Length: 368
Image 1 (cartoon, rainbow, N blue to C red):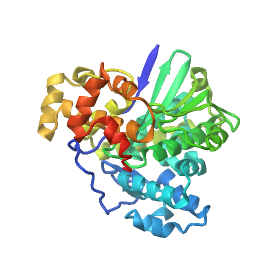
Image 2: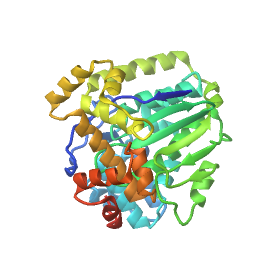
Image 3: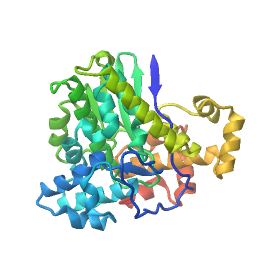
């Protein structure tokens, strides 16, 4: 049995190859509408103390990323997702620590997930908590998307960056799985361990920090960031959960999601980012998931100036770039993951998108 849980949410449409500009403006406050491509600091708030652990003053690094250091005083402040990637890249360079993102995630707690983390604490079971995270993370983060898949007696919690040309996607994945593990241990007890962890990054020279935090086998050069756990663990009841608090939090989150509104093209991006590497998603499939007719989907996308095929190719291009840049996954495997029957077809598509072959693009390194 396979059961996919992946929310649809929001963002702006961009054409292939178009550079992403980082807006210097930032918003604050947990009740404010979260714009597409933005995140609440939350977990990222731990970047500053993580830099201090290396005896590095975080303020100049934060300013170089185009952000105000005072923002990091409050986890409810909002920054562009692209600025987070740039800040992590600078932090890795300054500290010379290739697993800096992991260290940031290690420092974070379930409360770093804001209102969603509090809802998890008051969910009835671990499964309810994980589904709450998947369904509602968009109020905290509109640059990446989680999903939960059930395959027989195994559950796979995954986390994927879907913003175009996201920088430091490997560091974001490391930190996201690290805090997700902390959240699960907060709900199940500190002795809980996953079956294994998959990471979409090349194997580092020193893998011990990963083994030490996850306390499970860690497999690198994977297509997606995944925590693998027994399906039976999803039935674990959460001690101290308060149904009344849960109802109040659910009501507040629904109000916030309603205030955000919906950008259809980003709903589709989020769905495709969690499903494209595991199954073929036709326009009919996506329309059905969004509870609308295929012709309605086409009409609404046409009004936004971007078609379904263009969005699908944008997501394929983004996944391809991430796997080429951060992993050593062979081209044939990347092609198969993206739904191409042959590596040559993938190569032709990638050349159309970027002007280069995948091999040439990977050889140039592309720092983001």
